[in-house]
Image 1 (cartoon, one colour):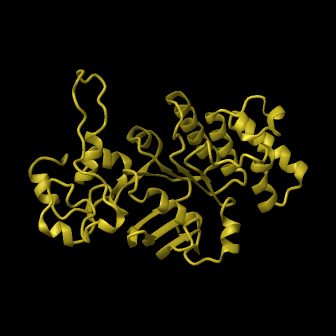
Image 2: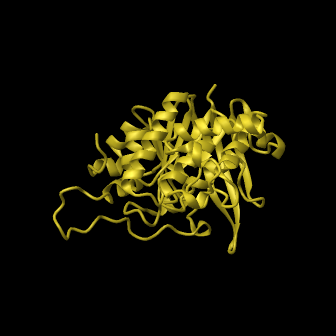
Image 3: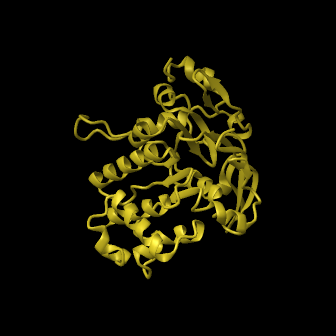
Length: 329
């Protein structure tokens, strides 16, 4: 049995323009110690998908489908039971290190809170554990900084503290939502290396959300490409990178900067912009922005086409795209 199994997940939100589907029937599974990456433009449904795993959606959100974690159905689970899982068996590193920590509580209190709540440690024992965690994630002179406040740390150090909080109870699943946002490239590399080493060391499963395809290539074994609340392409990371069958995936790869390109060469772009949720077509969410769009794309929700190596693509025009040589063999 997989550690995490998501089936036909739908998430409806209330917007100023009425109800809208933010996630449209996605599914995936994750084994223990397995790593999964989720990529896509802002607004494609990545963060709201993982927020549903944590039970952190708005109270007005409507969730359908199934989310099973180690045999427990999370959709509709009472909040009291969800609290026993959140922060204990599922840990999360939030996107913005500058605001993820409470500015009025010390680091020892914040990192120690899940230890006291879930493991029943005394204040003194929790403090010892916090010190060990801070030292493990690389906070310098951690013993003298337990009673410091978030504003007394740099952005990279705050992110390390956020990682320590997520790991405090030894979760089975770690979710990292854009964990290197607003950090410079040197600190980004350090944070990602830390996450990779901790996942390997503790045998956790990992879900990593990132805009950076290079990070995905180096960090996870399989991936989802999301657009408009749907998974348009998925599979082992090597297989998706090698073949890039969906036009949206091809657009993401084409938009990457190329080292050594002549000065003045403009980057490729995907025409148009991500539509609002209420404006998504009933069929393929990428219809309209895609150069292969035909009338059927606007009305037909594409089924998954299986390629070799458990590589799945949702596009009704795969044969035509392949015939034009746009898909690697």
